[in-house]
Image 1 (cartoon, helix red, strand yellow):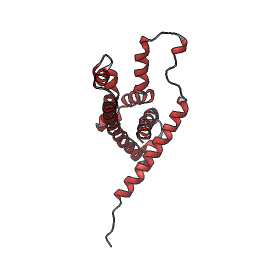
Image 2 (cartoon, one colour):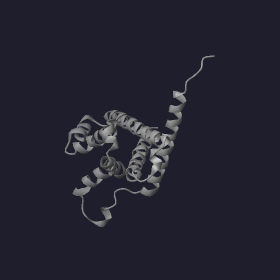
Image 3 (cartoon, helix red, strand yellow):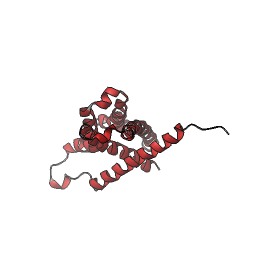
Image 4 (cartoon, helix red, strand yellow):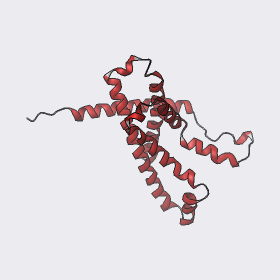
Length: 183
């Protein structure tokens, strides 16, 4: 259950990263982005991204709780406050802060900020941490690959998941905003 939840949050982050870069590069050139549906899609994607930041922070605390019950106190202390403490704490703090930056409308309209955050979300904090932590290893070609998987199919699936979630979110918001008549 938590694995599916984490995958869904990661799909929202990667999908928002691609959407944000695409929007930033094409918003001035295409008149499509001036239509009401596109503006609504953009605002709901920001709302979904912010919600995913909160849920990511919550799932991190849940995993921390599971780690506390699984590890001894010495192992947990070493993991949280040991020599690599920064890499344990940076993931939730970065995702939470990046997702909450866009509440300020001026930052939401900044193209360079959107492209930068989009690139950070696409690359992923986990991959950056893996590369930085692997610098102490040997430099033989056999140890160059850290992540084994099909990145392209994961990105395509994340983009489709993000768009589908935003559209479902938009349908839910329109249902809740409809006035109801009393019979």
